[in-house]
Image (cartoon, rainbow, N blue to C red; front, side, top):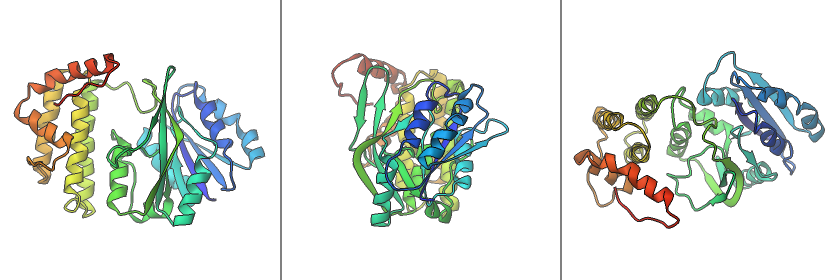
Length: 322
């Protein structure tokens, strides 16, 4: 098998046909397996998946269906998919998204021609009113796993997995992957279509407070993982950047002020715990400098949601600093 695409399914009945149809309709010569895992979905999404078996067989696509006995969450369900996958290369698609008909064949051919450990493409973000081509992303921004193809052997060799039960799984996975010095390439074509859906698979019904606590736990697990694998010293600055980036972006959200302050204290303590405390420097990124400013002047936290509202309400681009 050339390519296996892992598709966790949870509560996406409205979109699953478009997702599976785009995978079964893949063009090219690469042999394809779709690994669908029912993460105890409460709706009828899996009934729709089952109905695609005939079409998959006609198209020469292997449709492998598995079921979790209980809801495991996105991260662990993806890990199960990787374990079950038979393909030489592995991709991930969220069940409320879809892909271009040529995506996985193009990525696979590129991977073979250049003996790559990973290959990615541009994403297109869409909702009911507009489509936005996301191109020219920096490595810190291009952290979704869904617009990529990974060599399974490389993931296994470096024990790269999704942190079970954690938030921002894609970023943690992607940073660990990049720390292991893979041979990679990017194709500047928008082949993955990401649905901006507030009720999608990446957004559950946890309270904002629990989500902030989850981010602290995720950051701790990430730093611990890098320490255990001996990668933390060499990639200390990247680790700081990741955690500061997630912290600052969260500050623009609607969480209660007291919860944001608790999040700041917890992240500050976490940096001390692992000896990777960020320091003031002209070479710092926007997010590291912003974190340091907020540490010194906590009142800044209160104005960030207002700035975000002003930006979203304006047709023009607002220039601002934290």
